[in-house]
Length: 404
Ligand SMILES: *Cc1c(COP(=O)(O)O)cnc(C)c1O
Image (cartoon, rainbow, N blue to C red; front, side, top):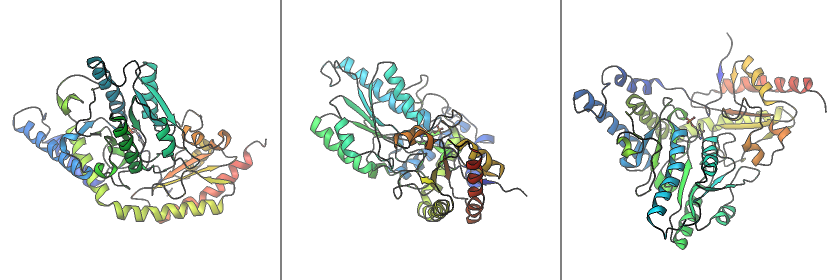
């Protein structure tokens, strides 16, 4: 039988049978609308409240600080656009406001997910905000001194991802918080800090008190929950405006009937992910190290992309010189192995990844990028199989490629 090896957990993860089991009743029996006062509605409301409390507990937050959304992308849009719109309201009311005569300023990094980058570009296009896109070093890290220099009196939001989803580099979020706190108090103006934590729930702490962020976004399907649901963590007193309008659900920030089954599933998935953090890290990290070591030993002219140590436990990302990423993916697929050429949002366009380019990797090398992202179900045999097949695939593609 042909092997089927899924090594694309950073793109999406399967829902576990336990998660599915807790969701199921809310499709079939307790399907009420949580805004209705009858028994069906009350059962759904109770489930929703319980899920919100459960998620808040794992994030070290208060339940009212959790806003359910339709996914990470939507939560990210809401966070960025919401902060800028709220600033507009304030400066309209208060002429002495610090952005008077100047547009609100956002600082982000060049290696963010497209959900952040495209939202920022849209805000620039609307002429609602100025945006600074911070460079990163060769390992994908944002330099704190560069961040500090970019801050202006009208900076209202800093948005840096917790972990990069293409190369796995972990940013020093807590240090950034300390820096922003110090500068905020000098400037006597609050600078909100958002982190895109979509890629991390199975591997790193999401304790918002420890991280010190004001806004944080998560998407359920990256940590064993269903697709189509996510959250925005919004610290008390953080002012944002909604993207969409309707009822008063989710404090008016996400109007619409809540996706009760999906939310219940997401809360259970987060419990599993955060509850098994140490164990998952240990197991996945060992297999990831084995894969990286094996690939670098067996395949010449290969670059490990991302930070050598400060990287998420599941990420093994490479550039193979003289071999095209899409061609490698097709050959891997033919062997039953699912990987990615970086990000589902950039692959298909044949543009080299903006993340790799920002890390200073030349375009012709960035074209040969492959990301293996491991998961809780990954086995040693699967890694052995990849290490058996991949060297041959790369060799053959290189031999076929026209010599320049
Ligand atoms: C997947 C991902 C997103 C977008 O999540 P969706 O579930 O597709 O909305 C945003 N940021 C990062 C880092 C991601 O990995």
